[in-house]
Length: 235
Ligand SMILES: *Cc1c(COP(=O)(O)O)cnc(C)c1O
Image (cartoon, rainbow, N blue to C red; front, side, top):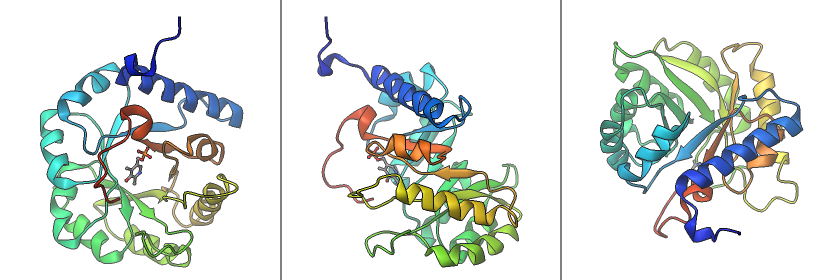
């Protein structure tokens, strides 16, 4: 008997996504485990996340500090948290204090503040440079031509560890893998000068497979696990 969609649990959908990641890795000829699932938990309650966190090796991604910090405090210590929202310069301290990774670094001033505010008892904050591949006015991220200079600036900051690049590609692509391959090529160009850069955060609910085929090491999935979010949201 087929089970109705409504009877599927978050854990069922999480397992299905993990399977799609595993299969895409296999298709790409990449090693098992080479792409980390980040469950994007914005707008979801801490209670809803508990069974997912207990079930497996997931990491969590949040966009809004006011809801993220209480959730981080409510869930078990040792859980890995990724900040994937836009960064205002007056909100850097809670990011530096509570998160393990930041995916949305796009300017030097923010890098400097995160570095200065990272607590001394925590390891360096893993950071990714967000790249605005197509110069879309509605999106954050630095231009591809500016990535090298920003990477050089970050490399001088001891409390940050530059790990690679992140992007949110345009939705309506005739070839959905094309932006992912461009981001991968940009990472390759950074590696000689910045050998700690080994990560590509790309791929969401709608473009998971093309992202994994192009080399994603982190995919960020919300809707495909939790269903549609309430409308008001701004990314
Ligand atoms: C919300 C969000 C996601 C998750 O997107 P879904 O389409 O719900 O999977 C991924 N990345 C970023 C930066 C987001 O803001």
